[in-house]
Amino acid sequence: MSKLTEIQRPIIHELEAFEKKFKASMKSSVPLLDRITQYLIKRKGKQMRPMFVFFSAGICNGINESTYRGAALVELLHTASLVHDDVVDNSYERRGFFSINALWKNKIAVLVGDFLLSRGLLLSVKHQDYHLLKIVSEAVDQMSEGELLQIEKARKLDIEESIYFEVIRKKNSIVNCFLLCLWICFIQCGSRDGREIASIWRENWYCFSDKG
Image 1: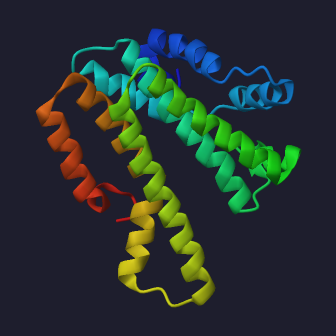
Image 2: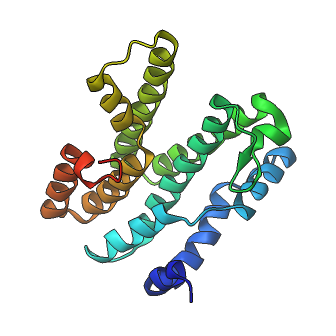
């Protein structure tokens, strides 16, 4: 048994149910879009973010339908950011396979990323999970600012230490997605202690990062 399988064992049934719901959230009537999303699903990663959501919910009031929507939202956001990142970085490989922009070119890749992000937002609006929209909007805002700040400073070569750390803080996908998972669950279950933990983690994120 692999380490990942061992970690997943307590929530294996939830992850299996999540797989079906996640696929349904990406379904489209456009054949090209359906082919591309199927390509993404077949080459999925470890799904650490949904796991964070389910484990976090487990220590609160338990896993419910809102938890599945939160997990799908996080994974849709993450997948959209990866598709867009490959375009920005001119990368033609992702997880050992061709990236979306390598197979279908940049224009389609950008639109696919936009589609995934919009599906996540619509999922929240449909079920009136407006608190999730705020969390996601803040995460996207931070990551986008970090990426643009890095591009600007890379061109001018005038980066200072404080700006360097600011770029890392804004761009750090592990931090942003982990906090996103925490906030989704802690806000859903109304855990004051959980929100305080997430706040402390956000303010002192560098101490817990392997970059420290």
